[in-house]
Length: 303
Image (tube, rainbow, N blue to C red; front, side):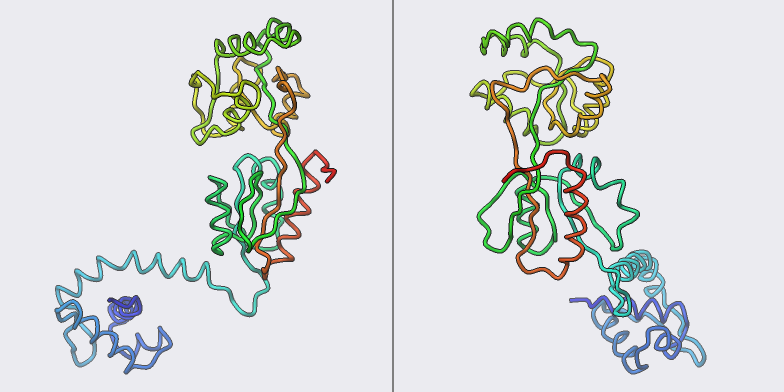
């Protein structure tokens, strides 16, 4: 197997023209440089340099190899510098996972003020919880729980799934039907409307339908957009139906750009959890994130 350091050494020799200069550049001994070069030449089966009296001259195979590896080696070196934690620096980096809308609605305004580096991941909740358990993530916000013994769940807020529509939709007929508690008529009316969905798993719409109608929706959304925030922007001041968490639409509801159509036969509420490994070296950083979310998420949680 090729050692990455062989390529790094080869690149340094090519660019400096001597074993001594390459050794000085890489902060290793000259015998170490020679060993790397000899190992690389033995591995690929070609001579890479003609050893002149004053300079190492690349062979044709050496030139071809350099052109092939110079950009990838630079990219790896850049990544190495980015992720290397200088022991003299107190700035650490953590990885977090949550839905994109929660990140955008709550955390995005604070990013530039955080006293640590941050990598964010969005996607399937179960995948994020699995990554947390494996040590690939340090902190997750989710409405789901699993059976892992290595992580702790702290409830901190809640979200209610609600049915909304653009301000131009006339929903008076539906509200009259809903007031009569005619569930089948409610479903028929809703099936005939124009719906928005997201490119990912439409979990909110599916759960809302199962909760109220005891089955999956019989329609496919007419418009598929990247995320829930996109849906709100698309229907704001216009027409279209969607199921969203209430906190995402609060501002547009207050401004009258979208309207609350139905909360369902009974409120459908998700408990939101802070999730982290029980043993973590990032307790201070995670506590700061928890404080931000606890302050910004509107619903207090009486549990």
